[in-house]
Amino acid sequence: MNRHYYVSDDLDDLERVEQELEAKGIDTEQIHVLSEQDAELERHRLHSVPSMMKTNVVDAGARGLYIGLALAALVLVVAYFGGWTQTRAGWIPFIFLALVLFGFSIWEGGFFGFQKSNRAFRPLQDKLRQGKHVFFVDVEPAQEPLLEQVVSHHPKLEIAGTGAAMPHWIMNGERKWHRFRSRL
Image 1 (cartoon, rainbow, N blue to C red):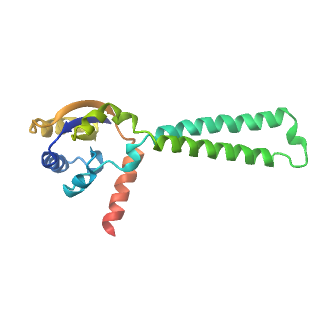
Image 2: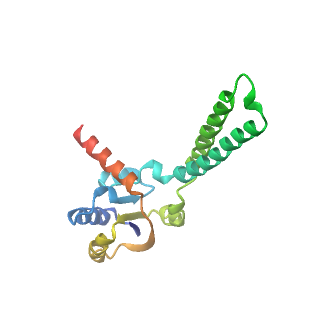
């Protein structure tokens, strides 16, 4: 999947673009609008970027996971080669310490990630500060012509680049969440 970024200052036009894309078969979960005016997005019924996607929590949490794995392995290796596991307590305190270090590292990584904006959106921060809105669509290669066809009819959309799309498992989770919420 590929992500296509566009910038616009017209929410009415973005609303029409989103409706046209959905009519062409592109799911709502593939379309997002990033803006500093969340209330306006809701009023226009645009699919806004979830709070979690606005931060760098996933990347930082993944870094924390790797650091936690390294620390946990280090504790277990040092305990084994230091002969500390030969006591009456055995492996239990070292396994517990390894789990605590692992969990803490993930938590701390996520905590730092919540404090930073998403790396993918950083180049677009100036546009957002100017009051513009970032419209982006995650499309399969077969959907690329549909996107180009719709976008070509909207001259107010300024192409802002491409990037890596949302992982399939996140998009599927978002689809299931929306179906669940619509049943309530």
